[in-house]
Length: 121
Image (cartoon, rainbow, N blue to C red; front, side):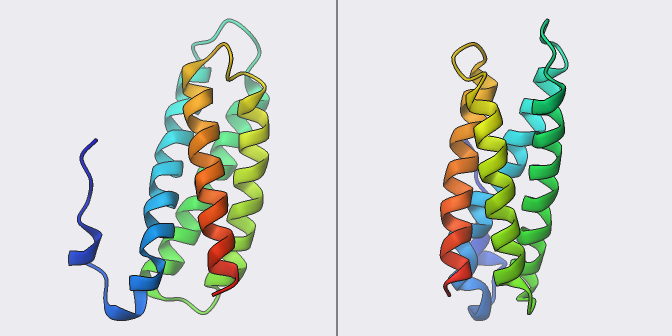
């Protein structure tokens, strides 16, 4: 997978957020891909799609706050961690049958862990 060289963009104040920014970006993409793939499944995946979309939005919001060093980083990262947990729980219900759900759940768990670290920073 190609990566963005975040170090080239971040100022010293945001360097502490780098791992979480990366996890949020990865999770956002995994959620968008998963929600799109769920549209093609034969079974009702509406709960998964809705949770994916909410999680992607939470990741985007937390990512933007960290990138600009906003004052609500801890609060937004806590909300993102909760959204990631909910999404991972939903995707894990389908992970045995759908690779996209498995990858999404893994990205969500990683993002939740990184976001929780930000709430303690």
